[in-house]
Image 1 (tube, rainbow, N blue to C red):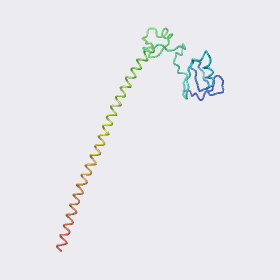
Image 2 (cartoon, helix red, strand yellow; image 1 turned 180 degrees about the vertical axis):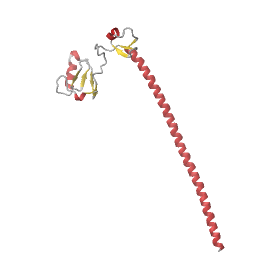
Image 3 (cartoon, rainbow, N blue to C red; image 1 turned 180 degrees about the horizontal axis):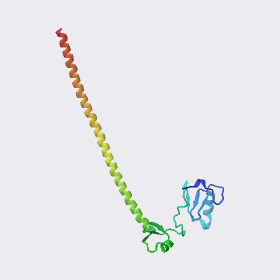
Image 4 (tube, helix red, strand yellow; image 1 turned 30 degrees about the horizontal axis):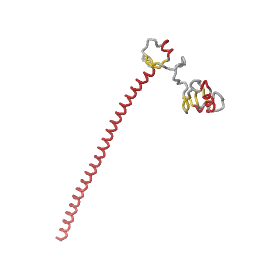
Length: 172
């Protein structure tokens, strides 16, 4: 992608060309852009601005310099009115707005499906996390209980040994 900061203004040649006029195919600095938009003939021109601009990606037919108005189903590509007559005459096509609405519906359906899947996975993770937490609590309870039983057993053994030693001491 072309970096707008590396271009110089195509009009005055001195300022940084950080604005790209889509209709004129020219880079302009802020001052030249302002003057360009004040001109009657170019006041409705559109500009791309930002750090990464690729002017090669135009939203219109490169061959005929026309806006795309159809979408060719057979070729899976947007086409202008001239292409529709010359190259895609017998192809199935939609009006571009109709096509984009269908694509938007498809994308929405896919996105909704993905969101549902993510939510399901998130629910499973949360359930797994909850089970993991309860398993840890249960393990702590069992360890504590076992520890208490071992301590009681050791205390009883110690008492038995002490009693046994005291009995032997008394016998001597």
